[in-house]
Image (tube, rainbow, N blue to C red; front, top):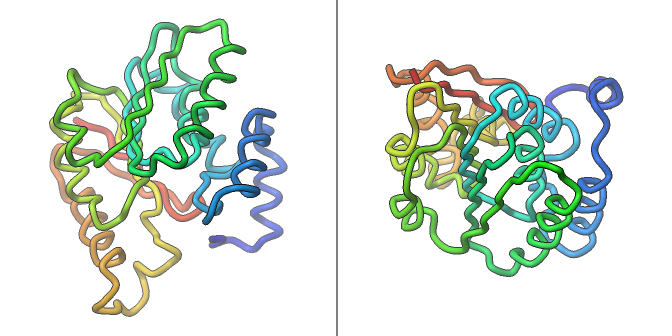
Length: 217
């Protein structure tokens, strides 16, 4: 989804850091083998996630929604030595593709970054995770965003960063609401929740399909 003219978007990509080869390869394989490859973060948003991670240098990361692993790899780029990334996805059919690229990433890094894939319902898995996380990336099924948020808030600390993807939802958040459109309805409520939660400092960025950064106070 492009909210800017295509030529402007192309210019932005051309004048941002180049997409690493491993991500180009993963994107190519995703488009060849997987339905709805547009779910990939893509080169521009991927560089934004990488930059945020480099600035934050999170020791522990939780990702909700792995898909084929593109966004996880972008975030892993900025993680320090002996750090841990846990990524959850309900689709076991995509586990092997992501695993190949996670392994390739680890083999070509001097830093020790542990990437653990968990397959199943994030609603069940998140409460079972021990400790807290410095960065959380939410990019899964939209009807559960509010549920994920409440669970995640029990796993973060002051200074943690929560990143929420697809919060503009193809522009539907500013269109007349279809009563049958549960995803848009939930996202409208979710965006308001992030704005009004006194525990957060929140800014919504018009990156790709909308990316919200929320810092835990």
